Amino acid sequence: MSSVFGKLFTVSSWGESHGKAVGVVVDGCPAGLPLCADDIQIYLDRRRPGQNALVTPRMESDKVEILSGVFEGKTTGTPISLLILNEDQRSHDYSDMIQWYRPGHADWTYDMKYGFRDYRGGGRSSARETAGRVAAGAIALKLLSQVCKTEILAWVSSIGNVDSSMPIKEVTREAIEASPVHCPDVRVSKKMESVVKDAKENQDSVGGILTLAIHRPPMAIGEPVFDRVEALLAMAMLSIPACKGFEIGSGFAGARMHGSEHNDPIFVEQENFHTRTNNAGGVLGGISNGEDILCRVAFKPTATISRPQETVSRDGEKGTLVAKGRHDPCVAVRAPVVVESMAALVLADLFLQQRARIDLF
Ligand SMILES: Cc1cc2nc3c(=O)[nH]c(=O)nc-3n(C[C@H](O)[C@H](O)[C@H](O)COP(=O)(O)O)c2cc1C
Image (cartoon, rainbow, N blue to C red; front, side):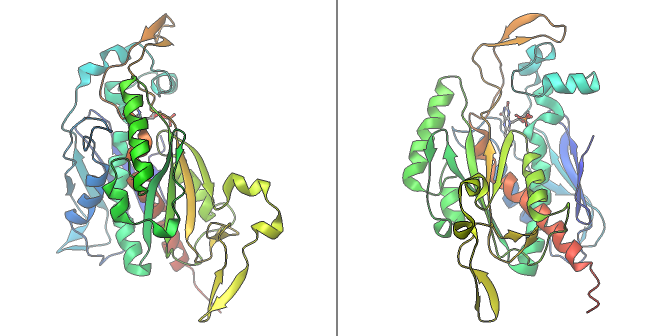
């Protein structure tokens, strides 16, 4: 199983949804970075379930414990082990899923691959695993904000057919967090809230799209030809459960444009190079050019819904599943902090790789 991410700033993720705990080991973080549990807790609190009626009611305090790698408030350069206990499990809700496969979920493929699975709460395929990624991402974000003042914001820009066209420059952390669906556009947020509520009341779920904006990213990071910034960001985002699409810059819309329209004109200001537009999304040739890195990340509707659905048992018996358990009616609503964390992990790793180059000239 591939549970390790990164080359120099590495994250090993472990744990199951209804096991004792989930967590990560972060290795390669430079020594001397000021770090305490509160730095990480802020991000975990943003991911925490049970915060309003539009997300899963599972109640987890998600308190992080730093087991190693920090001494007298600073990282020591040794592995940082982070532990988050699981508290609110109701494994009996999943008893039907021992035998019956949930359409749209990973029960079937885990069984096919391993011949055996921890079915409680989806086991390893559960998004509970992303708590560890968020904890690791908080460290990566701290590193990036110290070295480059990098700021990473992700927010919900579409739910179902409701879209926000709020200009990226106007989006603030405060406005994102003030919205129960993490959409900073107040008027659109209200519409999105009713779409999610309707889906929940109809025992259904709904998909959504996130916008990711990375302000002041480290310059000249990205390792051609395979570890391009956009290639690693795509991999990072598509590794998040339920993520089904990734675009950078103009993305798929660029395929409908002409070069004269798509190319971003370059100019110089106070000896710094900039582009007038940003169709490239801040990356050229796989290397960051210093402009904002702009992406869109699509999430499918939650698989587990309580409507009767056609399925089969492990033994191939035909049947109908009415899923129990507590679930997010819209995965996208809880995904922003996970998307920000995965972006931070990619950037911190590429930043260290760029620093590792010996510049001979
Ligand atoms: C933050 C977050 C919360 C999620 N919550 C749920 C949930 O409550 N119920 C569910 O069935 N899937 C949920 N998912 C998605 C499943 O974990 C995912 O669909 C499943 O592992 C199958 O993987 P796939 O959709 O990538 O194929 C969530 C995903 C994320 C990122």
